[in-house]
Length: 280
Ligand code: DHB
Ligand code: FE
Image 1 (cartoon, protein in one colour):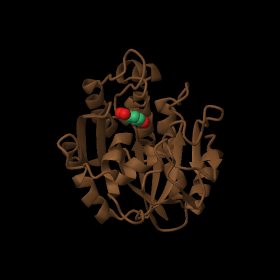
Image 2 (spheres, rainbow, N blue to C red; image 1 turned 120 degrees about the horizontal axis):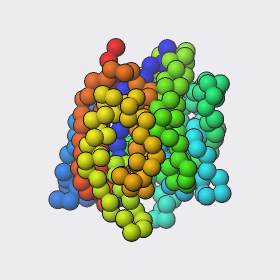
Image 3 (tube, rainbow, N blue to C red; image 1 turned 135 degrees about the horizontal axis):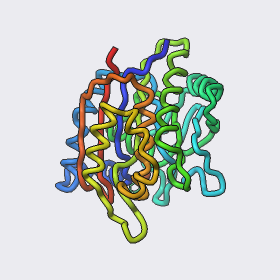
Image 4 (cartoon, rainbow, N blue to C red; image 1 turned 60 degrees about the vertical axis):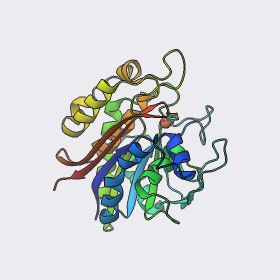
């Protein structure tokens, strides 16, 4: 059977992708940030996931404001990096896993979650930057990727609780897939940041560190935080953190914390990163 063995959380700042693509990772500004991912890059070479369920948000790239699904799962064979205004990132196409993705769709929808099924989608920095942080610059991504897109752009975003529950439903779906697969789930976005309005530039290190503590040890309590708390305390784009709760909901209650990293700033954002292994 397929099994979720580990979860990864990471911010997905577009400037990180630009730093990688333009050979700036050892610049003094960027070096401390990339050093925070050294552990995970080695770890994932040993873990060798077959499939990553990559929870991210589309930033009005593939879904414009005319059509914004709250949750969508991409069931296609292959996804190209999106052109976000500067041309597509020079990274490989992402290979999907249509069989597992459609199995997750049917299981989760029968469990009362309304996932939108997407077959063709270009994937933006929300998805490609985490892949680059974890895998560097390979010719091909070393595993299949199932994009799960969450609306955190157009109000209202789903609650943290609903995201956590969706993670649990995804886990149940994966565990009923009849093929031996090593599956990871990644939650991306955050941490605190606000890109617009009078509070642009907001960073809240206390909120972020509290979130990093609680997502490991008391996720069920953390899931109860109302969306206003994210907006008030972590900024309008801090709401991206609800996507980490999908990742956490798909793991066991007991997890082993293999890596915790926090760094301020990267572009306008506080960067957070966790590696969590399921305890048997
Ligand atoms: C930035 C961060 C994001 O998460 C994003 O989606 C876009 C921009 C930033 O810090 O610049
Ligand atoms: Fe974002």
